[in-house]
Structure formats: structure tokens, C-alpha cells
Amino acid sequence: MFLMRPLEKQLLSLRHHPALKKTDWIWNCLRPCYDAVLALVAFKGMERVMNGTDKIFLHPQSRHTLETYEPNVWKHVMGEIRSGDVVVDVGANIGLYTIALAKRVGPEGTVIAFEPDSDNFHALRKNVKLNQIEHQVQLIRAAVGDFPGEVSLSKAQMESHVLSDAAQGSERVPMVTLDDVCKQKIDILKIDIEGYEEKALLGASRLLEDSERSPRCIYLEVHPFAWPSVGTTSESLLTLLEKLGYQAEYIDGGIVHRIDYWGEIIARKNDKN
Image 1 (tube, one colour):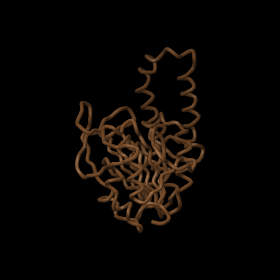
Image 2 (image 1 turned 30 degrees about the horizontal axis):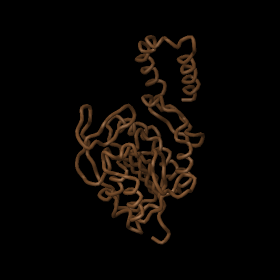
Image 3 (image 1 turned 90 degrees about the vertical axis):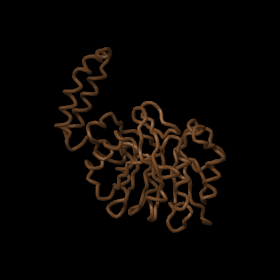
Image 4 (image 1 turned 180 degrees about the horizontal axis):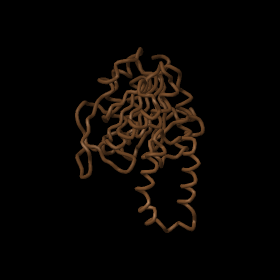
């Protein structure tokens, strides 16, 4: 464990040495051996200190993960977490936020993580186990939307998104609503689902309108470029948030009046609600 980080850094330094810039064929040949060595040496996980604040361990298959990841959003989210919180992570991917959040909320808290992509979900499950937080993390392999059923999921490298119609290379996955799954009080809701964010909110309307159960804060990664295919607009999303009793803000606290580009917005429950 303690030798893993310096060994990994030495190997990465060697891999990216200028003299070896055009030797991909060598690395392609050596990769199976390298993977086998990692499986033996890093069986307890590969350490990552995310954004300099949160130590997590990752399975060797997630070794390409860098320690700097969405630093501004990460800082804001982690600063909002309180011990004992119940956090819902929609679009958990391989679990970077899920793991850090579980450690932040502590043994009295809970993280409910949704991830529909089969490869990402298997990595997520392995990474959660490595960090010994299974007792406080609920993993659900499903997309989150506005109706229960089944949808097609596009798979592209580390990211995936729900499709309106089945397409070549897509994967059929179950879809659930937060209203059906989350019956308890939720403190923080985080959504990163590549354009399907309004659908997820529509499927959580009862939860979000319930003053006793609704989260105090919703983190939404918005993807306007993906909205036309699902019928979302800036106006429709902001109107829905207002109807549900939330005020949309930017990371710096400025009020969101229109969403024109990809990024993070924070929706806070209005005090009057």
C-alpha cells in the first residue's frame, strides 16, 4: 500500500518520458503484465487524495483517475455536507463523489448512489468495497427519470446518457424515479446525468415539494447541448425548480436567470417553503 504511490508515479513518469513518446506498441504489449502486477500489488486499492482534501482508494481498473477533479464544485459540495446527512448521488459513475460523501457524512449518514452503466456500476461497487463503506452506501443500478420502466443508454468511454430511442451500441437499463425509491428525508441531492436532469426532477416532484423530506440543496450539472432531444429548455428547467420551491444559483452565489452553457448550478430550498 505504502509503496504503491511512488511506484505508480515512477511508472507514469517512465511512460511519458519524451524518449518513449512513440512507443505505444511496447506499452500495448506490456499492459497485460502491468495489469496483473497491479492486481497483486494494489489489492487494497490505489490511493487518491481528491483535490487535496479527501482520501479515497480505487480499484486498479480505475487507475487513470486523477486527483484533481471538478475542484470548485467538489469544494462547494463537500462544504455543504454535515455529519449524519442523507445524500443522493444520481449518476455516480465510478464513485468519486459517492465515496468522499460517505466518509464525510460518517457512520450515522447514508449515501444512495444511482448508476445505470454496467461497467461503471461494477467499478463503483468495487471502489465502495475497497473503502469499507458498504454499510452506509446503497448502490442502485438504474437510470433516474420521470417514470419507472426501461430505457436505452448510450455508452461512450467513461460517460453515458439516456437515449430517447434505442441506437446501435446502446444498453437497455432499468429506470426508476426518486419518488418511488426515496421515501425518507433527503438532505443533499446531486444530479449529473448528461442532459436528463429535468426528467429526474420531474420524477422527484413529491419528494421535492414535501417540506419535511425535501433536500436543502440540489446540485445540478446542466447540459444544454443535450436538452433538445428530451424537450428540456432553460425556461422549463428553471420554471420547474421554482415550482418545486427552489432558487437556482451559480457556484459563486449569483442568481441563475438563464442557462446557456454546460456547468454546475445549485438549487436551494426557498426559506418561505
